[in-house]
Amino acid sequence: MDKVIRQITANIGTPVYLYRQDIIQRQWDTLQRGKPIGLKIYYAVKGNPNLSILRFFQRIGAGAEIASGGELFLALKAGFSPEDIIYTGPGKTDEEMEEAVLHSIRTIHVESLHEARRLQSLCQKHNRKQSILVRINAIREVKTQVQFSGCPSPFGISEEVIKEILPQILALPHLEFEGIHVYNASGILEYNLLLENVRNVFSLVNDLETKMNLRINTIDFGGGLGVDYSDQNLQVDVGQFYTGFSSLIREFGFHDRQFILEIARYLMAESGYYITRVLDKKDSRGKTFVIVDGGIHHFMRTALFGVNHPAKILQNLPQVNEEVVQVTGTLCTNIDKILKDISLPKPQIGDLLIIEKAGCYALSAAINHFLSHEMPPEVLLDNDQWSIIRKRGKHADLLLNQV
Image (cartoon, rainbow, N blue to C red; front, side):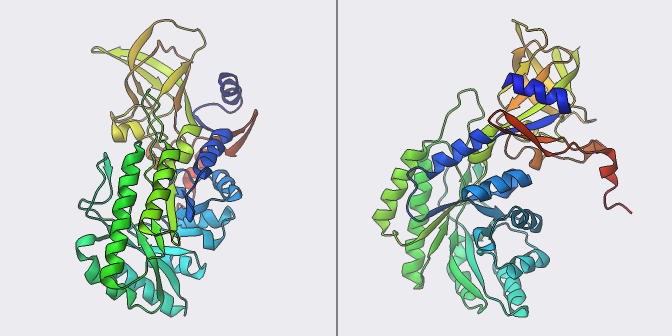
């Protein structure tokens, strides 16, 4: 990899994103082995919406989970069939939902009674029917660092009131109720917690079907499969998760249901590298700062969550000794830290810094326009062949759509 990285940076400069297709394929293959009957994997476009990445997932058989009109546009552009697209998220505009209805996507996930009524009006306007899932903020939670249910949340309808609200949604004639969406937590590494979530959701399905005399055909669990960003490199035991999942399907008699997982991090994170070059180095009041030509406008995860990604220095002159440094970028803000208190072989000006596990929620989650820097290029590595899948931005791009 070091040789390839040197070749890429010599040709197109830094900063740059690099994605390894073989790792993406490996992660996909892991999710396909022993998969429970009825389970479909949807790639969560928000994780990395590069068009070439989307086309890859479309070719290998994934669905697309979108959360905006822009992501719908990209998914269709990448070749996804509308029936392989599901639409989630709490803030859909009328324009976005109307576009989704006109394309006849598989499901729109309704997050409130008001949203359901707006969707009903749009479907009535075009004399269309739209399949929906209803998102529920469940009472039972899975204890992890990132919670989506079991707490106050903008996502979904609280379970405490679902039996009051759901009949009103079911009464809307242009909406075809298909099932529920319960996304409890994210970044889970312990398969037993994933199974706890499946059991909780299955119990909720049983309760709703028994007390409300309805049928829930499709159950969306959201995502949840985590990636370990520490140096321990822990892995989710997908095999054990699938074994337990299949056992729960048998226990609850749900063999005739359809199940959805929305996955981005597990599929993409380990494939990605953010590569930037050391511009300067200085000591300030007991801290050593390494200043690189990137920053949080490209890579914001450390600033957001306070956790370093694995990183290494690709050096011009190898150093044996290590030192603890702060890696900062080019932005005029003291939050522009892409690595904090990390021990690295002594970085020197001109060295390459490589941040690993940077394939997901990296470029797509950063503050790209701060200080008007150009967008970094993205590169896809397929075996030993690399290709540019996003060109480096130009200053002229800053004028786009400005009047």
